[in-house]
Picture 1 (cartoon, helix red, strand yellow):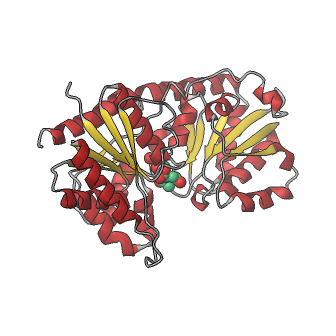
Picture 2: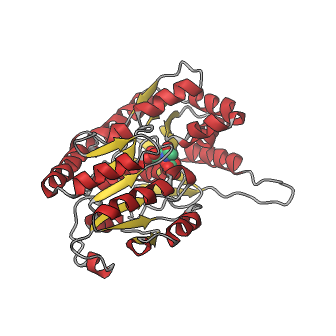
Picture 3: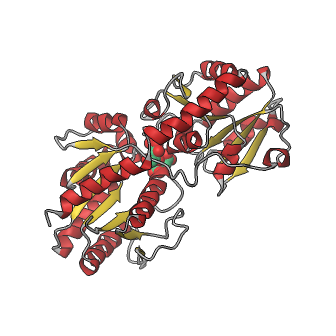
Amino acid sequence: MRKLKIGITCYPTVGGSGVLATELGKMLAERGHEIHFITSSVPFRLNKVYPNVFFHEVEVSNYSVFQYAPYDIALASKMADVVKNEKLDVLHVHYAIPHAVCAVLAREMSGEKFGIVTTLHGTDITVLGQDSTLAQAIKYGIEKSDIVTAVSDALKEQTYELIETEKEIETIHNFVDESVFHPVDAGNLKAQFGISDDDRVIIHVSNFRKIKNLPDVVDTFMKIRKELPAKLLLVGDGPERHRVKELVKTSPYKDDILFLGKQENVAELFAISDLKLLLSQNESFGLVLLEAMACGVPGIGTAIGGIPEVIDHGINGFVVELGDTEQAANYAIELLSDEEKLIEFRQAAIAAVQTKFNATPIIDQYVQLYERLAALR
Ligand code: GMT
């Protein structure tokens, strides 16, 4: 095996794309490759020391003469420095804008012949659906990349619909770190939250953005709660939190809805959960569904974007039309009232992670792409 030198740029803060990029970097490092993160801060899942993982901070000058701090230029400049100094084979960037465009600029600046792999995660394509001012930049970033991947077939198709391009886009599904996300013993955590043994536990984890459609999550829960004893764990924080709190305030079941805020050890919360709800308006993949499934928690998600590629309807979860909280609640009640069926779904969820979304072959796919580009240097 040839040892590769790979640069990774992603949004390092909480979010599926940053998680995926960081986990990929860690697992590549474990295979002996040299990894250089070029980001604005240390990626939040980079919680372990590796001798072959390096972090290059992008610092942005904030001179008063600039109306806007030039982050993209600073990133391209840092990429050019790192590529030159470290002799990188490949830069793997997550998101076309700004990261792919910055990588292309870095190639121009440095004069180095490194390969550029761009992974599309969804939001730049979703944004494009609403804001055509960025269309040219996204198309440029995609077309100038050597290899483009998308995290689901749905995102690939959506990209072709929105951008007229002949560029080949390859689907590589996301994966989870099964050493972190697996069924764990949560001790008496359920009791610590005041949840009784008879209560079914439903969980939603997100960044509480509008597209995560939290009102439908709450509405579905209310319908479930009318039929059986249950608690809803709302994990995460973001712009919708206040609105959802207001929504819940007057509900007869307000005491059954627990706002847990941001949490580090989500696997422990999945360990006390029976069902995951992800009723988003837009979702290119839904990494958090996969994390839940890896812990043995089946999900109900909307038939949107990549969610139907993650949930195998009727086998390890259910998909419903956007806004159909009635159907979501019916599926949930059916599943949560039937212990045998729930156990089957739990096992099927774990099995899907181990087969369809297994990290090893998915990382192999990325390595093959890098090797192809490195051979051209
Ligand atoms: O969904 C978000 O709010 C965060 C966003 C991100 O940039 O991390 O997630 C996107 O990438 C994830 C990893 O590939 C996917 O699992 C999410 O579905 C995708 N979000 C959207 O498409 C809205």
